[in-house]
Length: 263
Image (cartoon, rainbow, N blue to C red; front, side):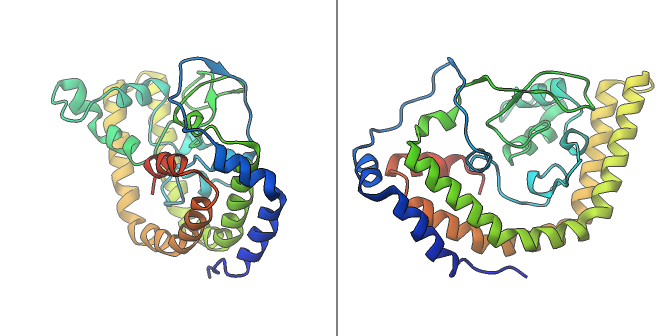
């Protein structure tokens, strides 16, 4: 189902030639990445560079790579809404308070790469009703991704690498999406029903969180083998991606990416 990147290496080498001597000098002279600051930035990336900071395919309900055209990723998210997500994110490891116990399940999901709405960590969206997607804005807070301080040639390299990753992985992901669809839709239906009860006041927020946790547990159990098979299949593509990027990033940049890439 999945094909390797053997033939793709030639394309990468061809794309890499665009960097020429200038890009080599830029890479060798690059300074160590600086720590992010709280300032806002209007810097923009291509879609593929943005995906560079997105967790890899895992087959979970709100997986970025499993979304189809027209899908609203908020409806598949493992969180009720922004309030639920941020409350979960505030829980610290070892927090045995009532607050900590209440959101421990969701907090563990965050550590595995799950967020509210868009999986892509580059974007920020305006807060809105909890079952509608936020509106994307072009100004965002600086975060760990800015500490990479990618040069224009490095962004071009990342663009090339992610395009080649898709070429390698998309066929397997598309087949997986077909197999996963009935389970995924069942989860989405349950979540929307829970949100409807929360909106109408029939259940409390705490009760809705417990109900959603149960729906997630069932979904993960039903799809465990499917998701493990996908992760195994995509591993080759991720390895090829890693090998290529290691030759295009500085040692400091590569170390930062490895810490945050999600796999």
